[in-house]
Length: 590
Image (cartoon, rainbow, N blue to C red):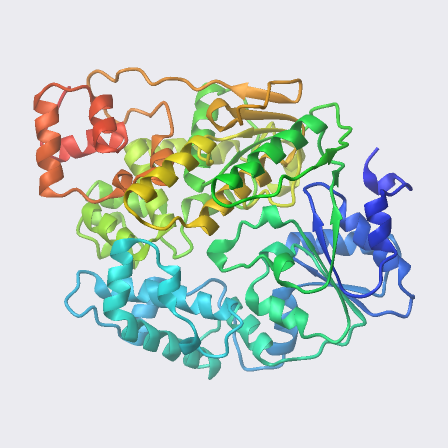
């Protein structure tokens, strides 16, 4: 029986339902927080005006339906952006841009100059875009109150930003000014920022703020300034939007702290695994062990999902799946399947593939079209820390010209939203799976493991560089979120399993397949393991541009008749990347 149909609540739930005053609720995955908030709202006087702030549109629609089912018509459900839209955009001269500005659009709007730096104007535009997002999600009143360098981690990107900082900051302020004056379209983050700066008092007696661990400082500021009863709920270990400048609001708010530690989604064995993974954080800072009580009752498998850390990892798993199981014809991708082949900036996987093949006429994206070759794209990726383009380049290096046919196969088997229930397998990244649950979950191999975590620590310490504890904590959170989507069975790669966790009826261990020697280079051969994602966590060599020195080293190793797999290991790259470079150097082994 699901928690929604049960009249019995835990002591923790009852404490929340009966509480008064401001509270912050730390709720583990599957702990029935929506059910608890509904009962809390039902306990308030019918005349109370209640606002429920949901994380995204899908959660908003689901929550609105549930409140309506309980006849709680005094509860208004909004997302942070829909709330801000109603106050800032409605009745104004503003026109909202569907997506963020593309790099080439910013370059043209501001007439940017790269000061002799190769593609410098585009790199500057990329950083202006990120600076705008950083400011709009902050609680600061002025761009000058922030130091954008605090967000730039890569050494080359940091050097570039330092050189152009004044120019980047000025461009950020000019573009924001153009939006403010309605000279150009505004982005969603902009009107949210305007809402925060307007210091509006909302007409509610109580505000319920869901997914508080991923709130932006801007939205948290709006929430905390309200003169009403405030309830914020979330899971400190489900913070996975640091790249969107989210902060763990549950730790920042000063009010009574309560907990929901019983999960009605999964059994105790999966609960124990989740706790063991979270305890990896002890490798970074002293961490208090977490206890989760698993009371999931599901015992059948109707929905199956494969969840990956990245778009790259998911596409690789999807390609592997359709290759090994060609008779399965109904697949579903959470979110539009095309979104996995496009970057936010507009570039597509096909644009990168055309550049890889030196077919410039096939490139539609203006930024990619400016690149002379793949090496220039790699250099741009380094200077901007553009993760999405980096992932696309990795996919192209892995699969080359097999990509169109493989993607066509996936699209042919993809079912529409209306036929989602027919899907024999659902594919999702962990971010898109947030808030979802499936009877059976298989994890891709691109999540962090304790071994990777330790290697990262050693690598940073050897360079005498400080550990990015926030980022590594978020990597652990991503694995926690992914594995807690499982209701009955979890399939997890062996290398990601904590040592103390045994296999069970609910936890199936996927043995790591050792890669065999590759022998002669085969054109567009598919890899047998996801080495790029693994290496990205511990070695920047996996996507550094080729230099004359590296080419010399590659020639020497190849001339020594070294095995391709050994060369890849020595140089910290994938086999396919080595093969691709050898072809560019006119080494052919038919």
